[in-house]
Length: 182
Ligand SMILES: [Zn+2]
Ligand SMILES: [Zn+2]
Image (cartoon, rainbow, N blue to C red; front, side, top):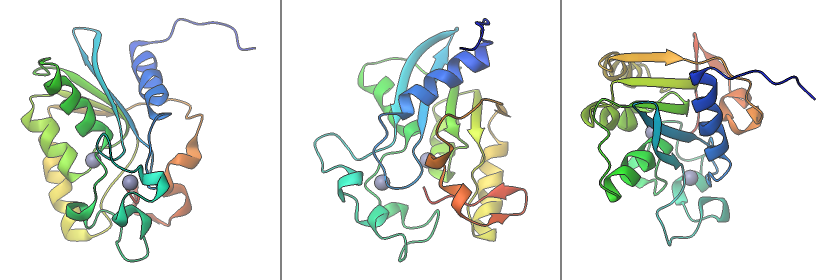
């Protein structure tokens, strides 16, 4: 057994995001997210279909079930899976919890849509575990633009107990980032 050591705040919150991810239900990468404000967890989210619908792992999402047709970062308008960061924001909205000025921990760098929503919700800091970027050059430039608008974004070092859930590993690396079917 490993000797106990007080975790840093980053380790603590990323550890919670990793635990939240255990419930993720998606054929793509599995992701967990935690929103922290004034050093308190105020919301969590993992990716999967909306409440009451057939789970993605059971074939509920046509887009996720057909990765041969729909490329990485594409056809999100056809994807019924809600991303972890979106679910964390939506859960806060559902229960009337303000996220303005908060920090979001996520096990994967936010995609285009999530980055927009994070920005517009007034999240000021994003801490992520794994890289993500769109495969397409044009999309990549726009993604980088929206990511750059987030006040503070940091990559956190944390041992991932389930690296197999990051689909990037099975895909060719593009430049300094990874292409992930999410
Ligand atoms: Zn899915
Ligand atoms: Zn996303």
